Image (cartoon, rainbow, N blue to C red; front, side, top):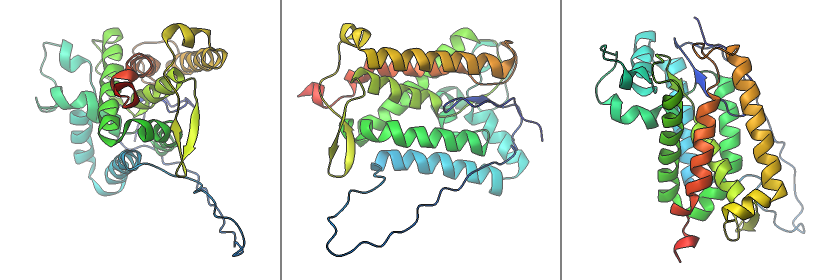
Length: 267
């Protein structure tokens, strides 16, 4: 089976032309360490809110179905209907897939992944940045935030590649939005009932621009995305690779609009 060029982006998007990726993975095992009755209770090593667990399950479950259950024809049908394809909106020629995908694909593409490595990296960053945000804004707002940042990422990708027929898949747009939201809080977190939650008031745009931690993170993040994106396509806009522009679209959406989803800002 053929696949698109892959890179080592932090949760990168992959533009795939045909399903059936090479599986690669690493299993991380945490040993069980006995604890004496006198030891004080410890906080859970990993606490994930229900909304984060939901998206982890959706992304992982869909990947398993596509790679171990569905037939190649079914996989192709899912790809054509679920992935975001810019030319579907700009071309006058009939495009494969149902008309319903015009409405759903700007969100459903974020649940699909091109390889095990693509899925694994995205899920690690989802757990790291999604959990503190979900603890702050709650389940319903987190689901809406996911959809909003996924759509925003797809829109910027479309603005720059409107005629492209390459499918766009991956949760990185929404996860980049979570990174943008965390930056708006200056990456401040506190422990609450065993979980980490974004804490304090949101920084104003001026305060964020003057915050050294935020500036350093954003600068390095933008540079890594640009280099990995260009490197994965060889500088060609017509080649499959990492859609770094979609990452930026998601990040900006989360950074600028997180206040719309923040429960604390409404009290």
